[in-house]
Length: 244
Image 1 (cartoon, rainbow, N blue to C red):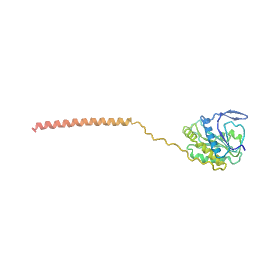
Image 2 (image 1 turned 60 degrees about the horizontal axis):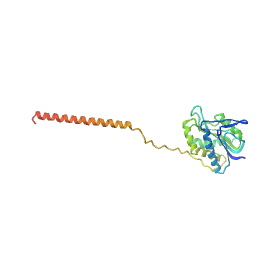
Image 3 (image 1 turned 135 degrees about the horizontal axis):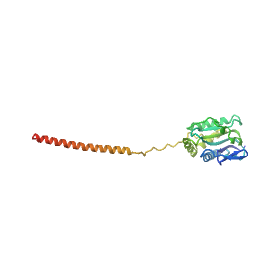
Image 4 (image 1 turned 90 degrees about the vertical axis):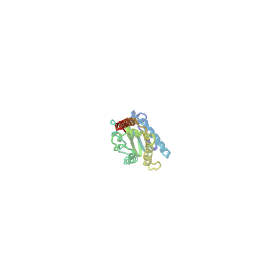
């Protein structure tokens, strides 16, 4: 056996295996930059826990024998936000273990992913991924789509979870658990920063209303003073008429 785990960063390098040669493999915009970050940190976490890990890019140089192989991806859709998080795996060997391992990922990640979740193997690319042909696994081989980068809300959330290491920690935890380990804890719910309250606001309308009210009060005060003066003059004339 070559290692405990193989972690492939989907589309890294821009080419993939095609028969005896290769073909371009661009992936979703931004995917090539993100998958290596997650794959590298997950591999390092597993190595720190005592496991052996092979890190591959999109082009496999050979067929590997490992306990678990996983390919990491971010989805894209022609219709924004039509997709979400998903899992793929082949139906064949090792018989019966691919889905249970995929279920470990579903149970660990999906409750903390606040967007759409797709059924397993909802596309042929998930169930028929070319990389399965390059791994011989003792436990399982599967593919993770963390979410849809072409959906703005998911894109923002996913990039933050790449940056804070959350996705990598989740991958390392599930792979550890898949081989019966208890070395790497579940990372829990992601910590989403709460933006500071918006203390800046446009008070121009309020200021204008106060100015208008002040002006009205000033006019009312002047009108009252004028009325008072006229009343006093009228009383003076009456007093004069009556000889008072």
